[in-house]
Image (tube, rainbow, N blue to C red):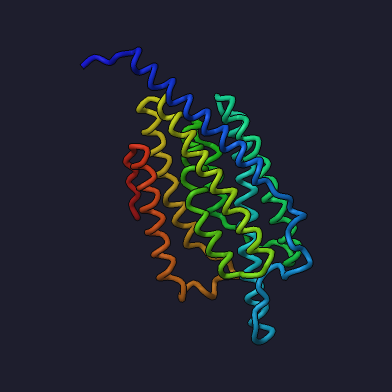
Length: 271
């Protein structure tokens, strides 16, 4: 069956129009949702949960929360670099305009984590697998791969984590930041889904295969990142093993589902 070039061009033009309008909406939404780090309750509520019990137990709990802050700071330092890459690489005006807000968001997140890290006594052991994930994503060949890994996958997957941290640390600066970031990253993820659809509409099958390969390469590192614990949280490894494995499986299924939404077959094995 022959392909009508005119019909194909019309579909692509319609998709581009819908995408442009969508990116403009996300741009306006991001501008409205922008917040100031100085507006958080610094000095009015505790930075992280203080805990109860002996001095040793409180210190161990504080170290655990300090490691959580360290990991989130590390993640947003990587996110700043990725958002700048997308701002520079996006071929569409509406997308570039949106990415100015995303770059500002990631810089604001980093500012908040830096201030919180200072208030809890500084950073501790970084996550080596998170660093490798960042390098992998920053070094992929195409913008389609970068948007898929960063915005569609990672930013979508991290939102439940922010909700989890916030619930475990009520009435703290940490919870305030996580609540703000869950909204911001929801916008980042939603805009990425919209933009990726346009990018893939214009791409060939080779690009989708490249995304599938990148996702398969990403998965072992992502799984190690989910299971990794720094020295400050090593004491909880055994008790959390079952929950960790459930998290890995749920995240694996979510990445596979995301791939299917874009008509890609992402086979993530545990081997």
